Image (tube, rainbow, N blue to C red):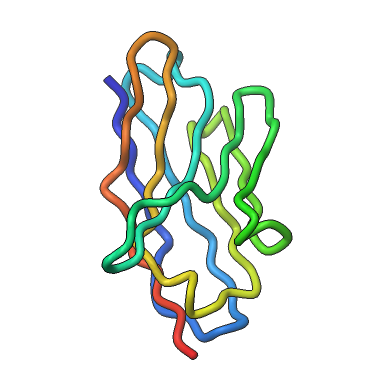
Length: 116
């Protein structure tokens, strides 16, 4: 199994920045791509960004140009740098690990609140 622990959430004013971290432990050798998702109150969970094990990144249109996903394989950590935050970015942010043969694993989430 793979365990994921997110951190770095908090309250920030619109236009501000936050950096989220997600540390993986367990059978990390099986981890392929890692991704961030978010879920706002009353809405479905939505995909935010993905980084593959070779560093290829993709972003949803809603965050492209403002958020940057990266990973440090030596630290088993994936980051989400969030700049120019908007109130509509308010959500619980979840980290997901896609593994080779073991399925997907999720963290418990970290709350991000952007005030206007």
